[in-house]
Image 1 (cartoon, helix red, strand yellow):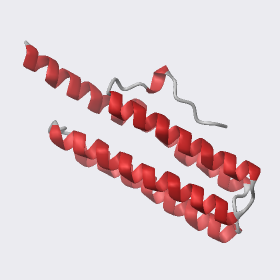
Image 2 (cartoon, helix red, strand yellow; image 1 turned 180 degrees about the horizontal axis):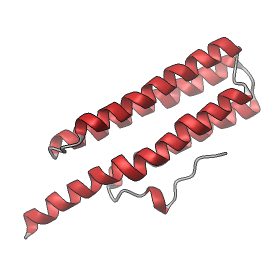
Image 3 (tube, rainbow, N blue to C red; image 1 turned 30 degrees about the vertical axis):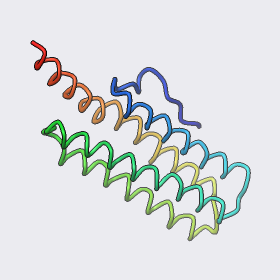
Image 4 (tube, rainbow, N blue to C red; image 1 turned 45 degrees about the vertical axis):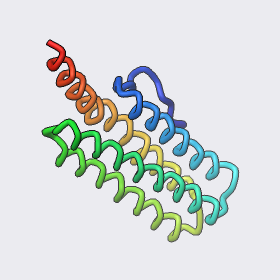
Length: 140
């Protein structure tokens, strides 16, 4: 399974949508590296790349939420922490299995891609809607 950015993932916030596209690209690069190479070092480096970008993206989302006084920020941060734990688990899995196994790929699909889709469609979209509603009410 490959991640794909489609209309159902659009939040309406250009910065966040662009970063989600980039995240999906990095997830797919991780999956591609697992397919083309069973080398543990390659998988770890690609996971590093994904983890670093994820941290950057979460920081940007959280700054945006703080700037608009988003009331659900604490819960949103907890969701981000869940994915951080998934990434740690993936590192451990690579370590234990001496490289990217079929089970590793399955975990990326289940715990990263599916998490991201649910997160964007629920949590991130609600932030974008809140931001839009607040900026619209200021125009009235």
